[in-house]
Amino acid sequence: MARIFITGSSDGLGSLTAKRLISLGHTVILHARNPSRARDAAAACPGASAVLVADLSSLEETKTLAAEADKHGPYDAILHNAGVYTEMEGVPGKSGLPTLFAVNTLAPYTLTCLMARPKRLVYVSSSLHMSGEPRVGVDGKGGKKILATRYGDSKLHNVMFAKAFARRWGPGVRCYSVDPGWVPTKMGGKSATDNLEEAIDSFVMLALGEGEEGWTPGGYFRGAKERKPSALAEDTAVQDRLLEELAEISGVPRPKE
Image 1: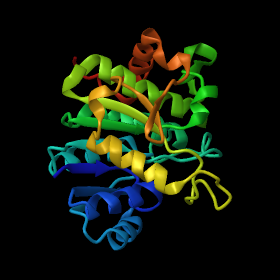
Image 2 (image 1 turned 90 degrees about the horizontal axis):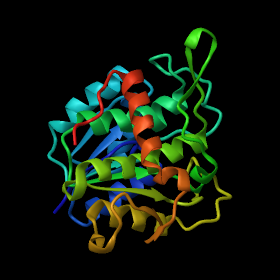
Image 3 (image 1 turned 180 degrees about the vertical axis):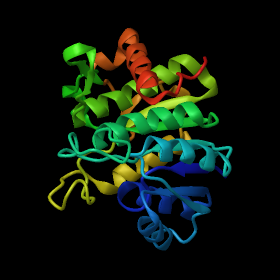
Image 4 (image 1 turned 90 degrees about the vertical axis):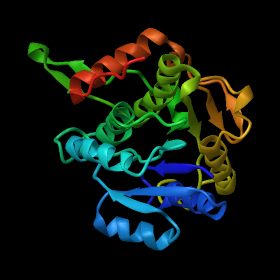
């Protein structure tokens, strides 16, 4: 049986995926933003092994989460599911950084760099990554960097993480990204038209590596099928530049190969 850590698992796809994995006999460690959400997570998934608390808009709490989560490892898979949607681009988080950038981009980078390497890393992306740009920030007056990450940009970053870390670590750590589609969760809304069960199936498939012998390292998936991502995501120089920028902003060095 597998041991799996899922960020952003107090509700939505994270919680539903956790329930499915637990029902299959796997050990799941949950994550929630605050104690209230942790209680919700525990109530929704009473079979979870633990619920860890950290606000991913805080760089310090994210670093602490990495250490706390490792105490419950080693992991067969880490599913970087936590994310916020549009309208959070300019809202400061606990560390003063824009919440969307901190949660969607900086947190998965930081956790990946600081935590012990699992057998699999899965980053949750979106088809909106196709319109994203790889920028993290732009230079303002006096060379000051102004963070300007949009939702589509952050989802492109998630695809790039899978490719960059797969390239660095080789077959020892299988890395993938996944687009769950537009599904009826709290983020997706009731009018969403894609199949929720299929999204859960794809998350479980990737977390467990079901059929991965034929998968491309760093592969991008939608449903149960591997798809072709944005051409920008394949650019290794752009991938490395993204990691360099995030290392500078976070103070967390890029992991060694």
